[in-house]
Image 1 (tube, helix red, strand yellow):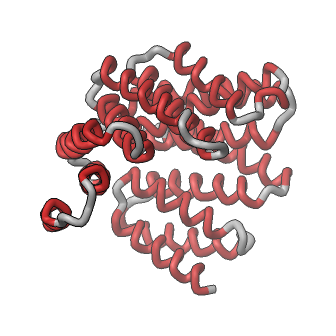
Image 2 (image 1 turned 180 degrees about the vertical axis):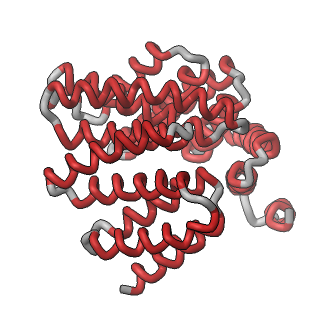
Length: 313
């Protein structure tokens, strides 16, 4: 409010520049509310910014793009399909005013969120087409066989749906999304295996196992991860091994009693000693992310201590 009052009181600023700066205040306010998960207040802030930008006319393309995209994302969360779709279409038009390579980045951002809108309403085929467009814009579509392209699209659909699960207010809705994501990760892994892209296949198997952990299908996740771990060791891939070990440790914590948690910390320390220095930061980040989903605050603090120690080494 203080910044807003200063702007309105400053007669040296032209009306257009004042409106642009004022819109930025509301955009930043919207970002803050969104981060605090106060989505109604966030939408209200973006709508105020939009009204101000309507007075500007030409110009302020960056601010207009930010408002259209963020409002469309929020309307997706509110399940307001019609207005969200209009917002994404407006953002797409605004993205065309930017120069490359930024234009491509903005298009991909809009299309990724647009795909999430259709997934929210279980319109999978439309989302699949949009992911195909992203692959084409990304300049990679011509480099792959049709099977590899299909696997890539299924992998991206799985990731989008799994990401959507993190934003659900209820565990039931989150689980519905995760069950949906399992299908796409499994299909992507099978196709990658068929065309002998082992590393990509294992990555999707790891994503599949992560979704199983979040669904608390512990024994199934445990068996899958043990098989993956054998494959990563044979491939001698430090990063995939680190990711697999992190998830195996999460499975272990879910099997332990409360009194046995100290043993788990010892297992983390042993794993860190075995991993290469390059693989340790990703391993700890992966582990913290998994624990955050489980709400294990005490263990998160211990992992953060390990991360700080790694940062000093």
